[in-house]
Length: 325
Ligand code: ASP
Image (cartoon, rainbow, N blue to C red; front, top):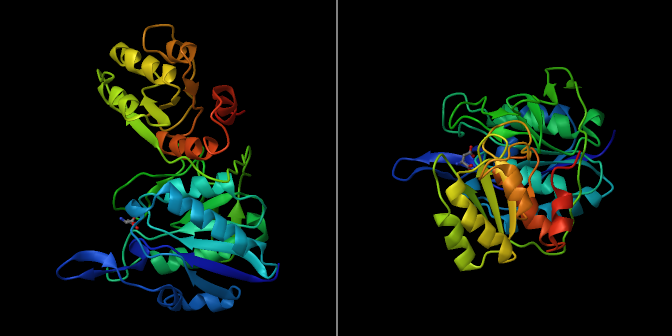
């Protein structure tokens, strides 16, 4: 494979330094980030383009969507073999999933960040960037969808999640595990990326909320969202997708108001499924028009619904995007 890897920078801890008065804040430019990784010279030509310099909690679906379209333009350049996107780790999984769903084509795209800023002892950013560029430049990563490369591990956008607030080994793919590993001498994949979906709206619908229904939580928050007139609600229930029965009147009201309601689980693995028949179960919710969200997390179901509502508001068509085999 020939060609260059383009690094798009968006910010995050990887581009931050400690300020004695403010704490850790954005401070490092794109070229500075790359200059801190001399071994990149031995991988392939690398070009840096700055997209933003924001902490990832400031990311919005609109910014992610703009980033997806910019990345796609870069990938269309014939001399580009892959793209690396530097990003804060907090919402990296959501950006990765939006890009995974939106971007068509097989060229590798790897998201990367750091848990320790440049000012800390043993920052992880430089090594992570090196691994991400090596992965994006590798033929093995072609056709693998959006990848998150952190701590030498390669994860699929659909499966990965941030699991620890501070530890460098924070990214895990619960239940399924990583796709591969970036070793000193080679990029290794031990399984392939199956079941990739493509959702390509010409505009997105951002008015979609995520509500976690913990033990005994009723429909108060859902009713607030119905009163606000939102376009979509993702519910995070327990286990197979079950909620307390006192949440059901609000859920019914939301569906009857024409709001797209998608059910997910707070479990880290497995699908929501309509196995139970008691009040508040996934089955009772499906019967009144709730869409079963499959095996993705609540935050990723929200991203998918934001894209899917840009294509259709039809409930059956929306349901077709979720829980695919
Ligand atoms: N709060 C930071 C962010 O997501 C954390 C990080 O980058 O690791 O931007």
